[in-house]
Length: 264
Picture 1 (cartoon, rainbow, N blue to C red):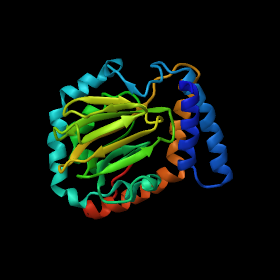
Picture 2 (cartoon, rainbow, N blue to C red):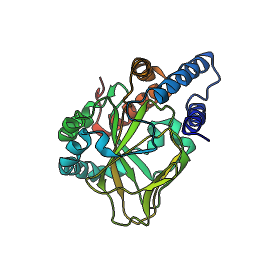
Picture 3 (cartoon, helix red, strand yellow):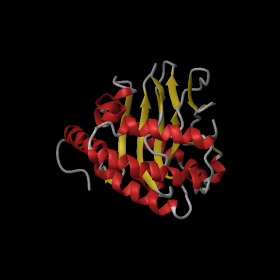
Picture 4 (tube, rainbow, N blue to C red):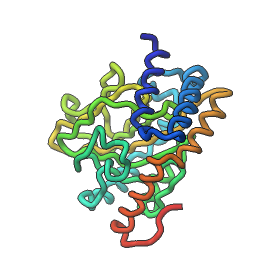
């Protein structure tokens, strides 16, 4: 199977998970996304590998250089780790791969939604995130000991994923991520950039917590894909799973921060 055929299959599988509602709107949206994904593959400015050489993205080294500031803010967040939500409690689409309390998240922004209290709590992290062109979402992704995410695929190939190791036990034989046929390992202060439209799985089989800064950013593409991709990403905020996630996170924030409006 060629790389193009593989990603064509991946895009179909992924969107079926995300757009599972058998409605006219969902079917229409799927057709739009199918077309946009084909353009993203054809007109990518950076190719379509499963895992990227981080030197392709010069800003990655700038983020790495300030990782200790992000880690310091993470340490403050983890003081209340027990109060953080499990990822599936915020985003229902991940329930097919995770439904326990061992994958927690602290969200800073997501597809047009900013979590203002989280940004106030982590101002240096937010400042550093502005170095990432096309930033779409950002969070701390926390794997408790023993967590294993089974093989899965992202819903849309118009974004790439950036992980920055923040708290990574030095046990590469027990902690890692597979993207397509490549097995990678996180390192504190180091970036990992991959295409989550490929099948991937991740695990923490150690007895310690693993945390990365988890970011989705717009995939660099040439005309006409750059226009269609931006449009799809802007429209994504209106999809059911983004809206449901917004409501769930807003409800959690009211409890965590003691009430008030925290998004804009």
